[in-house]
Length: 71
Image (cartoon, rainbow, N blue to C red; front, side, top):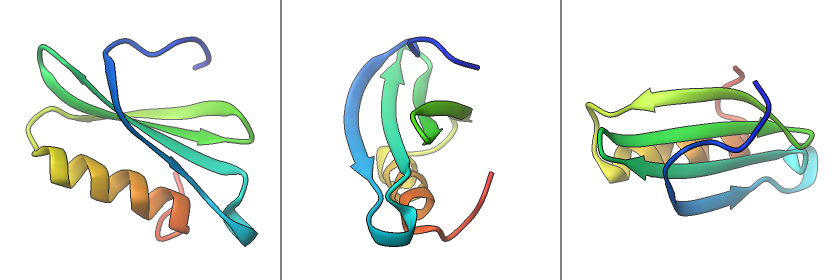
C-alpha cells in the first residue's frame, strides 16, 4: 500500500514521543475526504471517510497520531 495517495492534501499530522513513528495525511478529492495512516514512513491504510465531514477526517488523523487507535 505504498505510493503517492491521490487527492489534494488538506492537513498533515505528526505523532510525538511514543508515537513519533506515526503520521497522518487528510486528503480531499471529488468524492470527499480520505485519511492516510502512516507508520514508520509507510502508508498502512487509506481510510475512506467520503461520507463524513472535514472535521471528522481531522479527528481520525489526530486520533491515529495520538495512539487512540491502532490499524
